[in-house]
Amino acid sequence: EPEVTQTPSHQVTQMGQEVILRCVPISNHLYFYWYRQILGQKVEFLVSFYNNEISEKSEIFDDQFSVERPDGSNFTLKIRSTKLEDSAMYFCASSDALNTGELFFGEGSRLTVL
Amino acid sequence: AQSVTQPDIHITVSEGASLELRCNYSYGATPYLFWYVQSPGQGLQLLLKYFSGDTLVQGIKGFEAEFKRSQSSFNLRKPSVHWSDAAEYFCAVGAPGGSYIPTFGRGTSLIVHP
Image 1: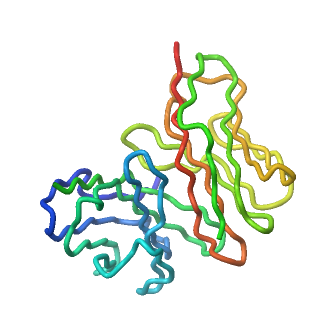
Image 2: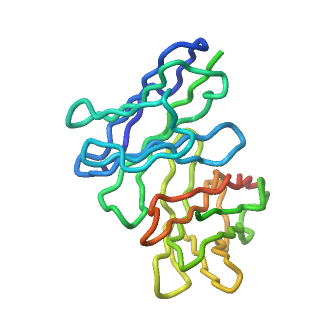
């Protein structure tokens, strides 16, 4: 069964460092998403991406964040200068349809900022 | 904007007992509604969804959910819980015609006693 894969599964970084989280969405999907979950809190939407551009983003997704689809398979989330409060589980998801809301999620990348 | 409330952070049941996980949503019209499950070390997996029609929805793994417009609820049920059902359960709401991107609740952790 096709699945969304994320790397790394866990990354520890120092405050102020840049981090890139990688995702390989399901191959025939066209819509890509990043969510995050701070420990004990809600799963929060960060950004959606379609046709090589951001289609929607939340207020969390500020100038420190960027997304990219550098080739035909990868979808990355970059945090330019990490802060302590960026520590969270980051989930990548993809979907094949715009208006169903049915997303397929990866296992998540846990980011710990020290 | 839509929102979701899952009032129970933890639910503990005995194996074989029935289960009901609560979900209340806020949205001005009939939303898209979802339940996702996250087993330890895995990504979120869709259990079931409601778009329209029959308000009782059947999902995978023996789960069902009922959409009650009058109560703005979409509670998840299972008649007999198995130890393997221990996981985190997330309710999510999407807005047809608006921001289709699912908004998640904070999740309910299900603990199953033998």
